[in-house]
Length: 535
Image (cartoon, rainbow, N blue to C red; front, side, top):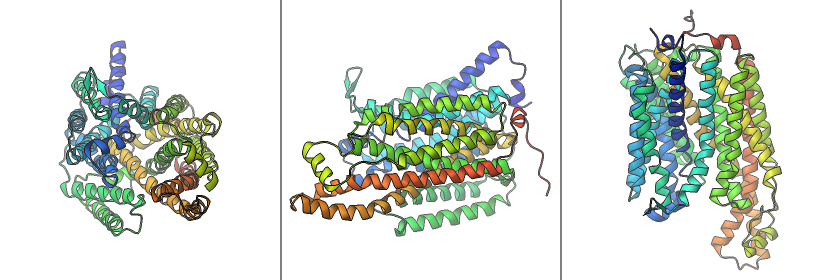
C-alpha cells in the first residue's frame, strides 16, 4: 500500500493530523530557505567580531548555497532509498547542530564549516519535505493547497530572512545575557530544528525504503559537478574575479565535464542517482527549466533591490527588511489564488500569466531613476544624505514588489505540481531534489549573469563620474571617498540594466510555459505514476 493510499477516506482526526503535518513541513522549509538571506544583513557585524576580511565574508553566504545546491540530488536519492521521514529528521537535526556551531563560533574557520554543514542539512531536509507532501496528501485540492503553502514558504523565505536578520542583528542581549545580535541569526534555528525533528515521527508517515543501492560514482560526479558549477557561477559574479578569471573558468569547465561524466554513468547503472526517465515527460522537463530561469531573476531582484534601497535610497537594514514584507504577503496571496485556480484552469494559463506579471515588475524596476550626477553626489556627501532619498517607495517600488510577488506565487504552485506529478513512487525524492537543484543552480547562475551585466553597465559611468567628481571637488576628495561615490553613482545604472535582463530571462521562461506546459488541470487531480514511455 502506498503512502497516498493511506490517506484516502480521511476522518476529521486524520484531516487535523494532515494539517499539523503541513505546518511542520512548512516551518522546516521556511527555516531552510530564509537561512540563505538571514545572515546577509549581519555580515558587517560578523566581520568586525571575528576579524573576517571582505574577501572571505561573502563565503558565509556562498558556503551555504554551495553545500545546499551541490548536495540536493544526493539528499533526494537518500530519501528514496532509506525513508523520507528518516532523512528529513536527519537533515533538520544536522541543520540545528550546525546552527549551534555557527552561533558559538569564535573564528572564521568554525563559522564557515558550520555554514557548509547547514547547507548539507538543508540538502537532506528540503527534497524530503517536498516528497513528503507528494506522498502524504491525496491528489486534488488537498495536495494543491499543501503545495501552495509550501511554495509560499519557499518564496517568502528570502524576504522573511531579511526582516528577521535585520531585527536580530540589532539586539545586543537575550534573556539578560550579553550577546552579539548576529549570533542569534544562527541560534534561533536550534530549538526550531530540534523540535521539528522530534515531532516528525508523530505527524509524518514514513515512506517505504525503495530497493536498490546508492550510486556512489554518480553521487561523487554529480555532487562535485554541481559544487564546481555553483562555485564557478558565484565567483563569476564577483567584481574581483569575473568570467575571465582562471579559477572561474577552471571550475566551470570541471563542473561541465563532471556533469557529462555523471550523465554517462546514469545512463548505464542499474540504480542511478538521477533516473533519466525523470526528464522524459515534456511537461516535467519544461517545469524544471522554468523553475531554473524564474528564481534566477527573482534572487537577483532581492540582491540588487536590497542594495539599492540601502545604498541609494538610504534605508537602514531593518527598514530595508520591512520594505520587502509586502513581498511575503503578495506571494502568499498569489500561491493561495493559484491553488484554487489550478482546480479549474490548466497550469499553463496560471503560470504563464504569473511569469508575465513578474517580467512587467522587473521592467518596472529597470525604470528606477535618480540624479546620479557628480554635483548631486557631492551635495549628498557633504550633507550626509543619499542621492535617492527623495524617491517615493510607495509609488516607485512597492507596486512592482507586489506585482512580482503575486506573479511568483502564481508560478511556483502550478510548476511545483507539474514537476512532481505522476513521478514514480520510488523517484519522488529525487524528483523533488531535481526541482530544488534547479532553483539553487538557477539562483547562482542568475546572480552571476546579472552581476556581470551590472558591472559592465556601470563601468563606463564610473569612469565619467570619477573625472567629473575630481574636477568639481578641485581634486580634494580622498581616494576612498572618490571610490565610494563613483560606486554609488554608477550603481543605479548597473542595477537597472540587471533588472532589464532579468525581465528578459523571465520572458524566456514564460515562452517555455506557453509552448510546452500542456498538462490539463483535470490530470492534476489524478494519482499514480504515468504510463511507461515506449520507444
